[in-house]
Image (tube, rainbow over all chains, first blue to last red; front, side, top):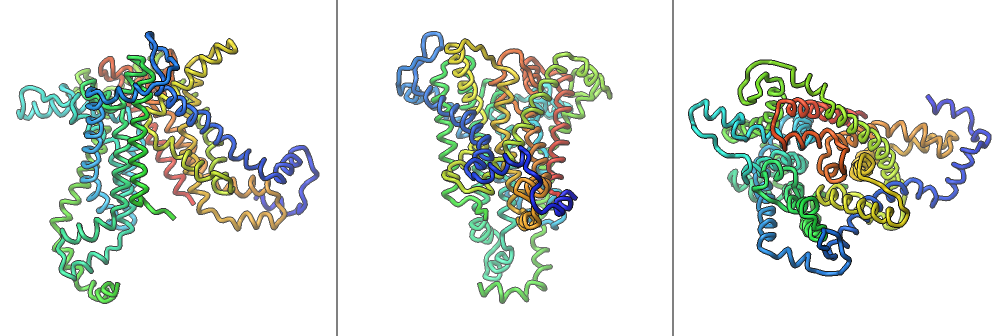
Length: 305
Length: 287
């Protein structure tokens, strides 16, 4: 509609201040670019990159007696990490994240396979059904798992009512609870890239392999799995990264008994107030994440055109 | 390659036999799908159902009540937290939608030096662990406030302002991604047509580009709103004393012990984000 009105006036209307300003901006592409790009670049620089830089700087500083930061350059925050106490936290985090990734893969691959094989009109509905829980409040979802697992929770009550157990089984505040919470939280991250990759897979290749005498297992391991590997890698990285850096899940479901890197960082910043060491731990976590991300791009990831 | 061609005509008679042979396999696969959906939805459904339970002992169903919701509505702390959450989400959504849309346009329409580096940096807030972003902003605000106080005698504090700035920082890249997806399948000939008909650059943008991008922008805005309303980790580290949002209030209450009021509050937040996300999905689908 609006366009039709403009058609009658081929030349721009008499120059008022606004149009002249717009005209001036148009003639200088540099000005225009900085107007369009400027706000995003500013916010990214000031409230993301510089803060990360400050943390990096802090990780080489020392801590004063009262928790203040002293600018005496040192590597001791990084060497301190090699204490068995912290190596353990590191190993527990990586172990929990790997376990979560493998479980998500085992559940997610066959799930994505079915999604890619159902009639097209169902696929979008299934996709939305997978996505919805993922976009709901993470804290609330973790709390929902807490409600189920605690001693007075539904699972223990049901088991007692059925006469299977007499004393409640401790499930909350265990590694099991943390892994369950992480799988619950990040399973959609595994399913979506797997689905994208399996959907692109040419299923006539399965018939070709079968005609050549391959059994179902061989078809899967020699044909389908190699060709859907980008999805497997993408999904694994997308689950591993948030799992290894998790904070809410081990905090609520681990209850201080399962300590992951995220909890260590929180302790150092809010409880112990050793900001330089907390900063160093944060950068160790960043390093893990960046290495995983680079591995993802190295293996190929998803090739979007 | 030629195998595919030769087998193609034979697939039709072979297909039924193959399907029969795969049947037990499909049973396992479909069971997996059903169980996974049960796993994804049962915990939140149980949470919502038990928020209507008349008993304080939540594992046993006693009877239907909306008492917990009534208590929640009367609770002044909850009302204050909800008000804070809404203010933060509205401001953060407005700002990050504008910044995100502009950034998407810059990436789609302009060439500039270090564009790849900028793109990489823009995806960082999506990849970097939340806890790292949270503490980096905490350290940054704390350092800046200390320096401002020392040099200019300006006293700034953590609160709604720091939370909002932090929310914009992690929301606008998401808006940019969504709007950029919309720009990717944008028909540029429409803009050329407008300019052929005499529209200047601003008019083309205002009356052609912007209306066509609107569904993408709205989807991005809804996403930003959901991210802001739901955020816990980054808010937790940048709230300071006194400024509480709904997730912070829920966390505090969970820590103090599980009560039916928390269930009611959680259920409300859950339904709000589901509604927002479905809205965003519908907008993104619209052509």
